[in-house]
Image (cartoon, rainbow, N blue to C red; front, side):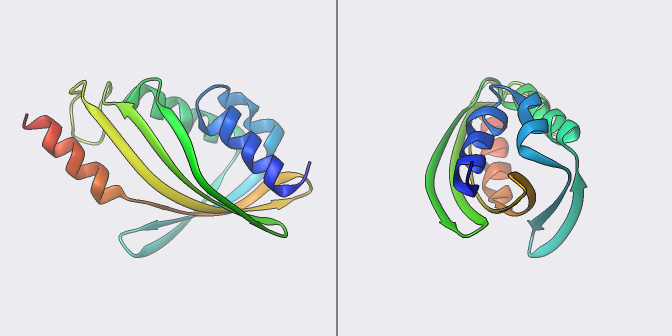
Length: 140
């Protein structure tokens, strides 16, 4: 599979919540995850199993969410993806108790593929937008 096919499969199987354990097929044993949080870059090391657990936590927090790839651009071994995730606030998120109301996440990332597996990614998520939705939903 080429880089775009690997990243698309990752989204369709793993990131979507359909089959989190498939991460072991499309992710390297150790993945560098560069995360931009309030203009500060943090890098964490992820394994396929802890990424699968991360997806399960999203399912617990947002139920059986939908995931729509809005844009995908490939350049060599790197694939840019922008997506929209829509779920229902069904579990504890930070200090916000479940409200049963919709929550939308807009995010994008660049994935680097090496040896037919995701080896590294740089991700940006509209965390403030999510927090504002949770706050608004809590006060309804």
